[in-house]
Image (cartoon, rainbow, N blue to C red):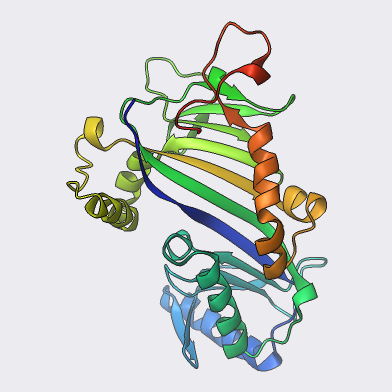
Length: 290
């Protein structure tokens, strides 16, 4: 049946750094956090070319972000450390990854660390999560739990809403499947069109329509589900796969070995066409999975 890939690329990337912020940066972040609480809104701090937005959230951390194309930066308070937690956590934003990929993320990471004058070495980096997503225009498709072929013991959830997770769906269209755990490996197949509409996230519509325009096609009209239904296939790898199994820690490791980790995961999690064969491993791959 007819389908079109509208986007494919990294959707999530998280690093931790076993490093401390400087005393000077700590004082500026502490003052900004106090002002954010007093005013009930984020406070902006500029360091060279880097603009940090400091929130009032975080009990023993300073929570900041560098915008939709940047990342969420969480800094442990050196004067009130949570034992055994990394000093810095960097969670890159999806739109920045979608438009700039890994190269953009690494440049941003190094620019911010340099601007904030945070000393670190490569061996202090720890990669904790990577998500890769493919958005497919396929109005005829609806995910089916029996089509998922997973390793024994893998938890599979079926849901009927963006934020609703259930194991049974009665009288409602299935809007997604989720198999596995985020700290290990997880496959999610879900209705991205509905999520974009509910969260008013126009960035994804812009990305999809750019692909449509490059093919000389009309923009998607999200009000018409039968012509604009986009399904996201997203494979997430957590620390048990990245660090413990494939020993991926740094940016260099990420480029060198991430393909091996994804190749392995795609052999273990598959979306298939069910047949009468009792050996599910022999079921043919679904066309959207291919």
